[in-house]
Amino acid sequence: MSLAIQSPSNARSIRRSEGDRPASAAPLAMRSRVYLPACAIAVSAVGLIALGWATHWGGASLADSMTGLRIVVIGPATLAILALLLVAERVWPAQDRPLFARGHRQDVLYTILNMTVTVPFVAVLSLSFADVVRARLPWLTFPRIGALPHGLVIAAIFVAMDGCNWLAHLANHRVQVLWRFHELHHSQEDMTVLTVFRTHPFVHFVYLIALLPGIVLLANGALPTALLVIYAGWVALAHSNIRLGFGPLGRVFVSPNYHRIHHRLEGRQDVNLGFALSTWDQLFHTAVFPTSQTVAIDTGLKGRPLIVEHGTPRPRHLMVFLSQLVAPFRPMNENQLPLPTWSSSSRDAKP
Image 1: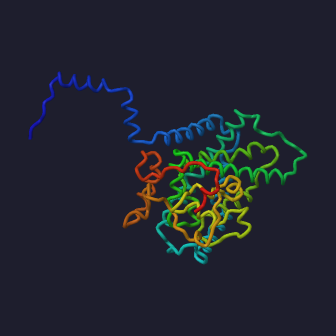
Image 2: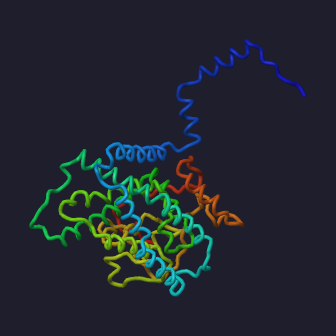
Image 3: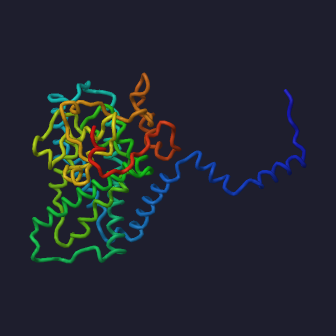
C-alpha cells in the first residue's frame, strides 16, 4: 500500500483553490442537503414562540391554555367520540381493513405524538400568535358591543374559523413549502378516525390564521370548549373509514364519504378542503360530491414520495415515523407530486 505525500506547495495550492470557490458554493451545498424553505417555516415558528415567551404570553396563562387544548384534543368527551367512531368503522366500513392494519398502527404513533408534543407546541404557538396580533395589530380587535347577541357572536366566530381553516388547507395544497409538511397527512393508505392525528407539528403554523376570528371578537364572546370538542370530533368523523354520507345535508356539512375524495390516490387532492362545512368548497368551486364509485376509493400519495409503512415487507413503524417527520426538510425527490394550478372552474374538480 502506498501513501501519497503532500508537499507544502501542494497544500498551499489546494488551500488557494478552495479559497477561490465562489461565495455561492456553500449555500448550494446546503440546498443539496436540506430544503431551506421548510427550515424557514420551522425557524419562524420557533421565533414566534420566543416572542411569546419574552412577553410572558401577554399575561395569558400557559397552563390554562394547555389544559383547554388537551380537553379538546384528548379529553374524556373527545376520547369517547373517537372510541364510538372506531366501533362504527368496524360495523360500516368504507373499505374492509384488518383491525390492526399497518396504517392504523402508524396512526397510533402520531396520536401519541399529538398527546405528548404537538398539544403543548400548539398551545405556546397559539398564545404567542394571539399576543403578537393584539400587540402589533390592536385595530383588528372589536370592542365590546353590548347590543350584539352572544349566540350570534359564537356562530360568527365558528363559521369564520372554519373558513380560515379552509383557506389554510387550500394554502397547504397550493404552496410547495406548506405541502411538504401537509403531504404526510395524505400518506395514509388505511384511512381511520386516528388519521386526524397524522400531522406534522409544524403544519399547525399555517392554521394559526383560524385564531383570528376569536381574537377579533374576543371582547364579545368566545367559543365554548364543548363546541370546540364537537368541532374536533366532526373533523375526526370526516377522516374515519365509515361508509357514511349526509344526503342533502352534505351540501352544508362534511361527511366521511365527502372527505375521502380529498384523500384519493388518483386525481387531484386539492378538492373537498372543508373541515366541517362543505359550503366553502361550493363557493370556490372545489367541491366534488361523493357517488357510489367514490365511497370506497383508495387513498394515499401517488408514487409514494414519502417513505410509508406499506412500502416494505415489514412495516418498520418507528423508522417510517422518524423519516416522515424529517422528510419536509430534505430536498425534493423525483416522485414529489407537482402542485396543481389554480382554476376557478368547477370542471377541474371532477373526479
